[in-house]
View: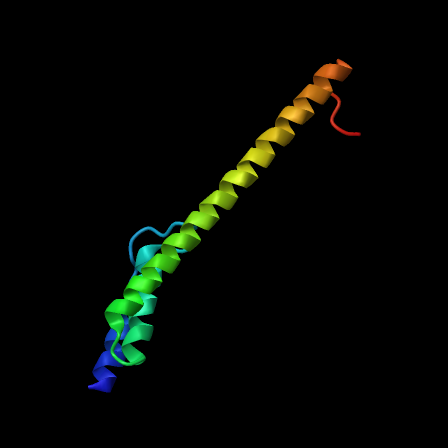
Length: 96
C-alpha cells in the first residue's frame, strides 16, 4: 500500500504539467504541497490543501506586486535619462 502510494506521488511529481511560467506561488502548486503534508500529518489533506492554496495565492500576489514596482522603477529611470539628454541638448551622450 505504501509503496503504491509512493510510486503514485513520484509519478505525479515527474509528469510535465504543461507550459511552465516563471512565476512565484500559485494555488495549484502550494495546494498540492499542502495536501500531501496534511495527509501525512494526520489525514488532514483537505485543510492542508486549503491552507496551501491561500499561501500560494498570497505569494503570487506579492511577486506580481514586486514585478510592477520594478517595472515602474525602470520606466522612471528611462524617463529621467531622456529628460537629462533633452536638457543637455546632446542626443549621443550616454554617460556621466
